[in-house]
Amino acid sequence: MTTIATRSERVGRSRSKREIALVVLLSGQLLGIAALQYYAWAKEDSLQLRFYAASLLAIAITTIFAVWARKPWAPWAVLVTVSLKLVVDAWNWAEDIDRALIPLSEVINAGVIVLAFVTYSYPAGDRVTRGMKVFFGFVLLLAGAVGFWGYFAPANVEAALPFVVPPLHARFLGAMYLSGATFMVLGIRARSWSEVRVMVPMIAIWTGMLGVVSLLNLEVFDWSIKQTWIWWAAYIAYPLIAVWIAYQQKEHKDRGRSARISTPLKTYLYVQGAVVSVLGVALFVAPDAMAARWPWPIPSVLAHIYSAPFLSYGLGSLFAATRRRWLEVRVPVYSTLVFTVGVLIASVIHRDLFDLSAIIGVTWFVAFAIASVTLAAFASIAALRTTR
Image: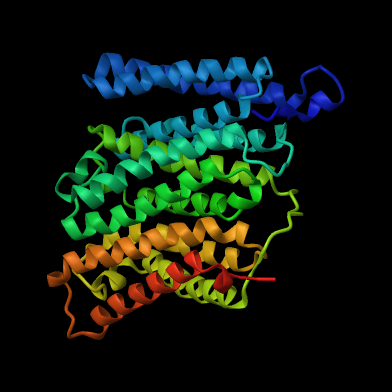
């Protein structure tokens, strides 16, 4: 794993004020975590809540040690700890356990996050580090589970999701998450940062927006099931870590020499990015209106949830269009192809739910067919996607 050093280590071995402040804030979090232990073991008869509480306590203590001892994995531990604590705060607010202390908790959490970003220096380099690959692996676990159950066993999708959705919705989500799993597999196999430069911000947008949407729809979550806790832990930790990775790599300059992307591919990415970004924004700001106009029956909460991956695909495509080399855009091209083909197949399977006499139903099939054929052409024909 690439060595991660605090900025104070550049000038000496004494701990900086930032390190000390980080230890103090993390120690302050222990008070809330201790309260969680009391509630989990004395007030609730929930095995999963007790497991979560005990795990969080162990992780928090380990993190304090890592920061004080200047372990190379300290910043990763800090981000995981603060994310898991934020999940507790969301549960506290949703279940109205003890909301009085939440403002203080959020001040501490914000301080921990800021210090995690400014205290540690992760030298920008042109390789995908072991730490990044471990992170991609954790994202893959969730994406693969939702993708498998949603697409291939839609009747049992609640095994991976905290809510039940009809089969077409399950397969639609499954296609999205199989695409996400493809992103992660390719990210794990990647060697250079240039290969995942577009992918990491897309992770942050996708998972971060799902976290925001979840906050806006707290009432749909059942906190008595483990899927809800996994959902919240993922969609708080994943975007936070992805943003931290991108922030640490902000100084990296691509100096590689490989085939440049062609004008047709660049143009397609701009068009796809613009169209899908508009769709994602519309789903987020007006889920009721979009649900009423969707090609098949859909509740507004699912329209809200769909906004997250669509914004990720849209903004990711626009970002990819600004890159110069095929190496930098091949991961989003391949992964988006998995999504479009998966959605097209699912739509054909459930075609009886579409009103093909309406323009929106026909447009849906035509749009995904065009996207699938075009992306497949770019993915398979080198002369079409690159130029000398």
